[in-house]
Each structure stands twice: as C-alpha cells, then as structure tokens.
Length: 379
Image (cartoon, rainbow, N blue to C red):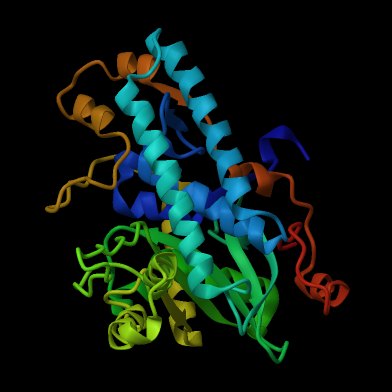
C-alpha cells in the first residue's frame, strides 16, 4: 500500500468526545489528537484527589493495601509536580500550595478508610470483581476514507453477578456536588461504557454500577461536658460515630435511635457519603447513542471549526481558561503555552496503543471463570 493510500488509526477517548461536545476550543487545546496541552506544575486538586482515590480502590481490588498505595501515589505525584513547578517557575511552590496537596492527601486517606468501613472488604458485593483498570478500544465506522477511528476508554472495573452469568461495568466517581440519578443515567460516559462493553462482550453485559464517593470527611461528634456524645445532627457515618463511642467507653445501646437515624441517612442518596446506582440501557437507547457518537466522531476527525462555548453557569469545568481568555482577547497565546503548559497525553491513550487486537468471544472463552485480562481490544 502506498503512503498516500495508507490508513491511519485515530484513537479518541470517551472523555475527549465529551470535551468536544462541551467546548471545541477547550478540546482543541487539550486533546492528544490536537495540541495535547497539559498545565505544568502542581496538579488541580480535584483531579489529583480523584486519581488518588481511584488508585487506592484499584489496589484493594488487586489484593493490595489501599492506604499504602495511596500514600505512594501521592508522594510520586507531588514530587513530580514540585519538580515541574521549579522548572517552570524557577522557585519552589509556596508553603500554602504544598499544604493544599498535603490536605488533599489526608482527605483522600480518610475517604478511603471510610469507604471500606462502609462497604466492607468486598465493596461491590454481591458482585465480584474480575479485573480493574481495563483499557479498551472499539472501532467506529465514520465513513471517512483513510481513517480508522476507535472509541477508547478505561473501565474502572468489570464485575460479575452472583450467578456468574452477567457482567457489570463498575465506575467510581468522586463528587463534591450531588447529581440526581435521573440525570446521572444520561451521563455520556456511562452510556458510552455500556455501549462499548456490549460491543466487546455482548448481551451478557447487564449495565453499569455507579459507585459515588463524597469527597468530605465525616464530622467527629462533639463530646459534651457530661462525657456523653452529642446527638446533634451532623454529616457523619454510623461507623465514625460508633468508633467515637468505643473510644469513650460508652454503650451504643444508649444511642440506638440516633445511630439508626445515621444509618437511614446513609441509605438515602441525597445524604449518604457513598452512593450506588445501577444503570441499565435499552437496545434502542444504545442504538441512538451509537448514531450520535458516530456523528460526533465523524465531525472530530473531519477538520472541524473551532470556537468557544461559554455556558451561562460559567466555565468551572475548564482547565485552560487563561488560554481561552487570551484567544478571546487576541493576546499572546503562544507565550502562555510556552511558560505554563507542556505537551503530554494521558494513560488511557498510552495503554490502548499497546493493546493487541483480540476477538471478544475468544477472549471470554479463554478467560471463562477466571476473569477478564487487561489486554482487551476489539479486532
């Protein structure tokens, strides 16, 4: 085949499609298929914290120590970020910035400890993990000659039902603001993951388990002057409250009604620290998704026009607002890129490029009863 007629593989992640639909200017700056810009220096705290919690949950599912893993990942990320900051700025980060990183690490450790105190040693029971952190790619026919487009992503986990006959995609999400399940079920990523999983593994995929984690430390109840533990309404968990009672040598039976109320709150998605939803999608809904994602991918690889999308509630979800402002005001964008950004890609892209094509059916036959390996791709 001549170089002129040679097809090229284009890998587009689920999150990248979301960026494109959200704001083409943001997508153009950060997409690994475009300018591939990543801010240098200290990480964004919300992204940093989410990554640490994910690493801990992954380690536990693989039989490791979640807290030890979290500490190690935090130390590695902080050392890398400080080195980049010194390289870019020419000085060490301010003590306040380092304190913020330390606080984020402590919060993550508290969240992870409380997660396992709440869910136990088998956190997705009655489901059983087969594997975690599974990179995937699914071909999508965008009908553009010379371009083989793949939708890619990473499943946080694949779990099987107690019967062993159904598969569930597990997706961990840290949150600071709650979203009603009526809106969560339409989340682009969740629909995309179920569509991709069914494309790879067929109808044995039942749906997606949303595993939400509130990034908040439970409040420690106040000890009254009498020595009793306060029954004032606070954001805490039964496990934390019981631990305080035990530490003070108090009888839990004397606090039974209050503990029952805390337990009730933890069963309510509107107040719980840990929120679970099972999302299942009809064949019709998935066919609609396939048509729409195909249209979006076709636009993305076909020299799209680039423009901003300023939403009425602001651009709180954008990591490149300074670049966007510079474009909007016709200022020196290249100066900002040179001094505040680097060109990099993310782990999903690196993992997917290393995948060897495997027929899904052969793959499942090979691993029947043993789980799902990480080297899974659509042929």
